[in-house]
Image (cartoon, rainbow, N blue to C red):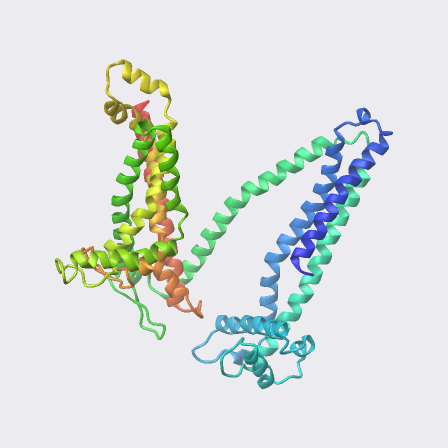
Length: 487
C-alpha cells in the first residue's frame, strides 16, 4: 500500500476517533457536558491522538529500518564471486538498486509485465533488453546475480510495505479501542491530552538534537574508517591535493582549506560593511516609507537560488573582472573563474543575512538608551557609535557568524565562479576551490565507500564541522566578555 494512502487512512481513523470519543463521553454523561470532567473536545482529541501517534511511530520506525534490513538480507544472499576485481560490495549494491528502479520503470512503461519482473526464469539478456527498451540502462548486459538480487529486493520491499501497512493500521485501531474503552464522564481527558501533546513536543524538540547527533556520529565513524586506511599525518601534513581512484592519491587538506577560508574572507569583507551600514541606515536614518521599500528589496537577495548567483559569477562578474584585471587590463587575471569572482558574488549573497538580522537587533535596543544619550548632548552619530552598536554587538556578532557559516558551506557559487584548482596561492585572481566543492566531486557517481578517495569526503566534512564549532565557541566567549564589560 502506498504511504500516502496509509497516511490518509490513519488520518480518517483519527478524525473518526475524534467524533467517536466525543460522542461516547457525552453519551456517558447523559448529554449533559457539565457532568464531564473535561470539555467534550478533549475526549475527541484524546482518541485522535491515540490513533495517530502510535501509527505515526510505527510508520517512521519501519521506514527507517526496512531499507537496512532488506539490504542486509540481500547482501547475505549474494554469492561472493559477484564482487569482481576493482569493484566492491557497495558498488554491487548500487547496481542492484539501479536495477530495482529499472524494473519498476520497465513495468510502469509497459515493457514488462509485473509477473515477468518477478519471474526468476527470465534470463539476463531478456531483462537487460527490456530495461534498455524502457530507457533504464544504456548498454551492456546485467549479471544474473545482480538481477536475482534486484528481484529479491523488490519482493522484500513489497512484502515489507504490506507488513508496514498492517502494523500501522493495527496500531491505529488498537489506539482507537483503547481510547474508547477509557472514555467516560469521569475520565480526565484534558490531563491525558496535555500530557500527550507535551510528549509530542518533547519528541519534536529532541528530533533536532538526535539529527545533529546522527550527523556527527556518521561523520565520526566514516572519518575513523578513512584514517584507518589513509594516514592522518599525510591528510593534515601534505600540501598537495591530487585524488586518483586508481590509487596513489595525495589527499592533503590544506589547499582546500585555504581556498575555503580565502573565498569566505573576501565574501565577508564585502558583506559585513555593506550589510551593517545598510542596517544602521534603515534602523536609524531612513524614513518609514523608505524602509518599507528598501528592506524587502534587500531581503529578496536571500531568496535567490545559489545556482543563479553562480551563473551571475560565471557570465557577468567574471568577464567584468577580466576586462579590468585580465590580459587586456592589468594582466593579473588569467580567466574569469577566480577567488575574487566567487568572493564578490558570495558577499552579495550574504548582504541580506547581515543587514536584516543586524537591523532587527538594532531596532531591539531600548529607546530609553537613545533618549538618555540625546539628553546628555550626544549627536545621532555619537549615539549610534557609542551606545546603540555596543548594546547590539552580541546580536551583530551572531549575524556575522551566521554569514560566516553560510560562506564556508557554499558550493554552487564556488563551482561556477572559483574554478576547481586546489592550490595554495595569495593571488586573489587565481582559480581555487573549497572543501564543499571537493566533497561533491568525490561523492559524484558510483562512489566506492571502501576507498580513501570517497571516504575523504567525510574527513573533509568533519573538518568543516570542527571549524564551525570553533567559530561558535570563540564568538560566545567574545560576546560574553564584552557583555560583562558593557553591563
